[in-house]
Image (cartoon, rainbow, N blue to C red; front, side, top):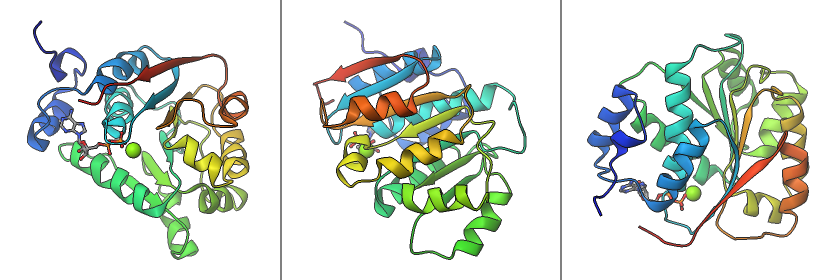
Length: 217
Ligand code: ADP
Ligand code: MG
């Protein structure tokens, strides 16, 4: 069997160049399964072990979509990624910036413990991508610092951990302000985390496909 290549999944030349520059040779199993489904417009619940490459499994197809389709609302961000901790948010921002280095797309990070005023000014500029922790982002939503009404993707990274940490109310409050036209993607390292069905009902509009990957590349 010939090994699949990123060219078979991703079409945007700037993204393919960045994938090469980053040294990724082949998609991991979770990337191979998730990327086509995201590009097909599906909502997803993806379960796959830590270290299996989930970040690129959501970043690549979401970036491909925003690079190739015009925004429905230039006053709104296009991708919102929620993750439980500041360290995880930093890693996602770093990965996104590596993949976006041949483009002009901007990424903003919003976590607790940093100056609210500064974050608000940054959000007002509507970076295409916002990565943050639910508590602080929920505060910005309350203060109307930002607009997610033209969002293409709401992505919950480590959805299982956000639930365990008691962050689901903040996640749901944020989700309520996001475009009804968005795609919602939930990523988790455990198969059936407690409460995930409830969270899915609250944040996913319509049906979600389930992708379970047991192999690690
Ligand atoms: P997860 O979120 O599933 O725990 P990550 O997205 O953090 O996994 O990826 C784990 C590591 O694998 C990271 O260092 C990432 O850069 C690397 N990685 C991801 N996809 C690939 C790939 N296709 N080829 C090589 N390395 C990859
Ligand atoms: Mg991860």
